[in-house]
Length: 221
Image (cartoon, rainbow, N blue to C red):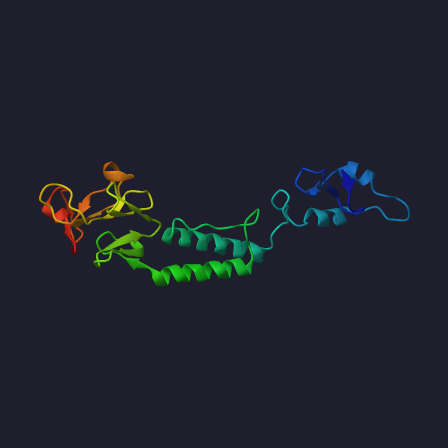
């Protein structure tokens, strides 16, 4: 390791050890390496001043100021709030995390955008990110963080919770004997397909048996 300064106990670490390495309080060993030509020996109180130097940062990264730490905390809070509203939101962060004012302000604008656009389905209490309509005006809700896929019958449309369980199902072609075109609504289940879907709802949001008439919502033909 190479000494960086003749009067401070800071050394440069070899490559791969994460940048400058602070080696303090070497006592006599450190003092013995100080140059003696024309300079006074370093006093103990001067050494104590170096001991109070800045705290080391993360390995290979500079230490943050208190202001930067505050901004980093604010960024973390904003990210958690955004994730709560949109679980699929992704963030690009520099190594060690971001602490820039610009990043914080951009996240605040994104959070404001999500909060303004937030519509809640009164049947399930879930935030809605999209409305999926067919040519006849039948509408299914796509929950925040969810998706829309076709059913086992390609003409069917299923909107899904973030975990893949069914949210709304539109069945324009009847399935089962004597049933006209209809829709279904569900609370969150455990996963995809009929096996993973949650309890069935009527059009007012009450839990009903999956095979009851109330579990089949009327559709425009």
